[in-house]
Amino acid sequence: MKELKGIKIGKHFIEKPIIQGGMGVGISWDQLAGNVSKNGGLGTISAICTGYYQNMRFVKKEINGRPFGTENAYNREALFEIFKNARKICGDKPLACNILRAINDYERVVKDALEAGANIIVTGAGLPLELPVLTKDYPDVAIVPIVSSARALKIICKKWKAAGKMPGAVIVEGPKSGGHQGAKYDELFAPEHQLEAILPAVKEERDKWGDFPIIAAGGIWDHDDIQKIMELGADAVQMGTRFIGTHECDASENFKKTLINAKEEDIVIVSSPVGYPGRAVKTNLIENLEPNNNKIQCISNCVFPCGRGKGARAVGYCIADSLGDAQMGKLQTGLFFSGANGYKLKEIVHVKDLIDELMTGEKK
Ligand SMILES: Cc1cc2nc3c(=O)[nH]c(=O)nc-3n(C[C@H](O)[C@H](O)[C@H](O)COP(=O)(O)O)c2cc1C
Image 1 (cartoon, rainbow, N blue to C red):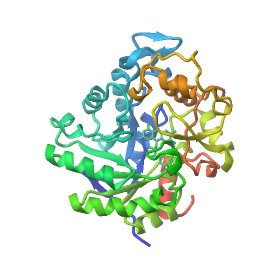
Image 2: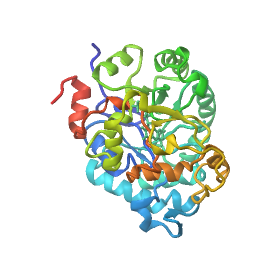
Image 3: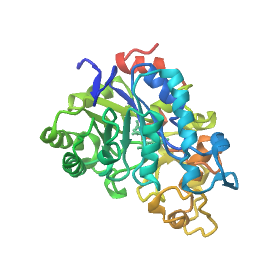
Image 4: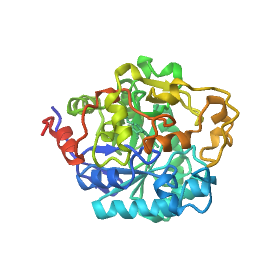
């Protein structure tokens, strides 16, 4: 049994090797991220579509109850409010911010997150090659890519080394994770793409560039899973779905209940306008999906691969609107992202108790 020790991400010491993954829209905002950091893990605030619903008061223009345009959707004032509230919970402890590379206004949102007080910027869904330059005025801020292959880490390290700032850590995410996947549909179930298979190759690549920690993500559920993945060379874990089952998680009660009621066969893969497959609970939206639906309007202009609603019409739903609806608990129209183990969720607990259980293997 390996002793679970804290890790350093750049200059920031995380007391417990448990990272709560960024979850948009609005699943990991101030309450969840603040409480994870307060309890010694690393809380990650999602910067995705911060202008939705409860933050509508910060939005300058809306259409049909949705923030209009990228600037309103990735709302600077709302992100500042989320950070302010999280800081009330965790004080000066490190807080990360997750910003997908595939969003429109990526550079501006990184700048907003830095100014709002993020200590660590995490980016997946694309290669964040420009992050060292975007964060150059913030030498204490660590930058962390999410990769699903050693090749991606190599490309990033080569570019970042030339720019003078190396990763504070790397998150290696396997295909059991919730939300958007780094692999194509055909690869998701192939043994060579599973976390256990890609982790050693990522570690080998990391060794060529430095000794920054490796954080493993995707399908990690309990203390035993943490031990097993650490045996394979991970220094810490990132977990998403399990944290949805907490009182502090910013998702609606309906979101949490949807996971609690889900059976193994209800967790499915769905095409997404972001251009990667997504993993979610099969609810009404997925069951009745109508591809090539020309009625879908693009209001928020959220991610560039969607091409201003073209991708949304092709797959049959708008990603920002559907994730926002799920956060609000709208069962008919919401898209409820979940990891492959989401059906294991049976109860809602406090963040503190979950972290204690993950660290010790003992349930309170
Ligand atoms: C509801 C939900 C939303 C997510 N949103 C994002 C996101 O916006 N950005 C991101 O990098 N990862 C996102 N993820 C992935 C998580 O951060 C995490 O890495 C992943 O879920 C880990 O797998 P697990 O859920 O099996 O623990 C999301 C996951 C879920 C379940």
